[in-house]
Length: 110
Length: 110
Image 1: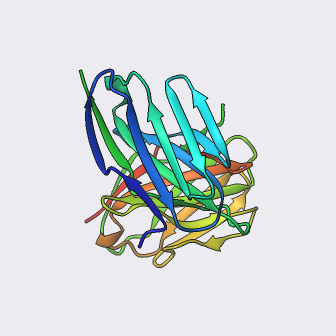
Image 2: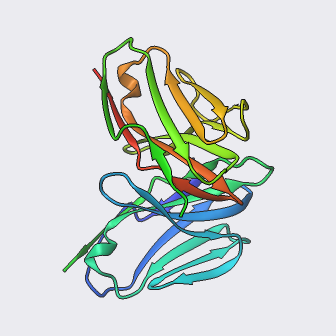
Image 3: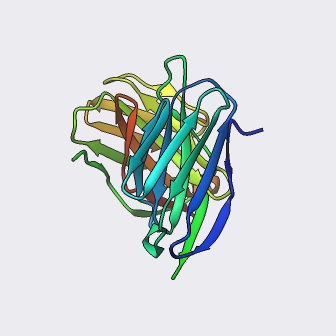
């Protein structure tokens, strides 16, 4: 079983829809990251969370440490939001390397 | 803005060749990482470094080595490239747990 599980793997939605991507993890963590990868490979860090909720524009990320679960929400989705969204955790215990989920491929249709 | 650059976006090499992938960051970060990304497997950590001349194995170090002679530069070395090392290679640096990624190098080994 992977240490970081994302769902769904693929998601196609219409412009304007509210999008939710989920991430569950099975190890102790010190932080959780949400990353965005556009076609061509470039990765952008969206959020780093250790508790609660963060908001940036139309993006909202939440984490529940007790349930070992995080969600990424996109409000009023737009075709330019089409990308792969990756959840990654930094394990507790000092290691700084990240463990990644396999990503969610999101397509927003006009 | 933090900038992480990688020496090549695309690289084609032959089996048995020695391959160098270079990564440079301009923000004096101590931590640097090399990942590979493969369809269905997501991102996996190959090696990381906490400081100059320091290196630590990640999850999949076999067939790779690294060099960190200067703080800003972290090199990934394939001593004898093999076809199963065809992949997208991503370099990252981090500060306070937040990762900054390079654009990636898509390596094809023929």
